[in-house]
Length: 144
Image (cartoon, rainbow, N blue to C red; front, side, top):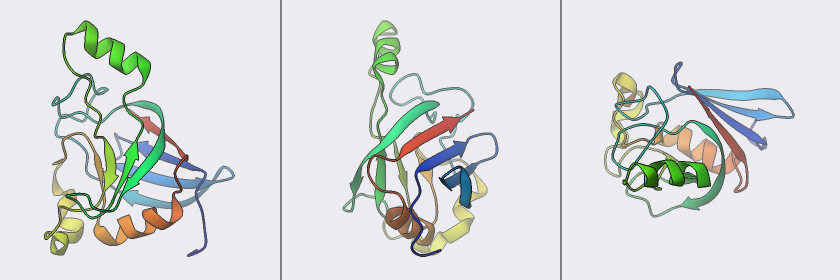
């Protein structure tokens, strides 16, 4: 419903699905595109992987290069420590976002392949729904 507010976001990477939940019940599911090397957890900046684990939607970006963006709190302390041990930067601009500005006409066809740099992408219309339904501070679980 238009007034629904999610209290949990779950991304199932294997299914390419993002589901909004409220009080343990699913509200809506979206088909997503991920990074081109989606299997396995993100290990460092530029690896093309989408993180795995428990994070929070910690901010939003209206002026993104993509149609709106919800920032995921990656990297955690353990993500940063792992990347540092590999002598690589962990990265940090991991978001749920719409399509690149000016390419909204692509719509659902964007799902034909994983094209992000490790983010979670939806259509612009879907991003408008997420923007409204997912407040800052909402937990997000990114599952393998």
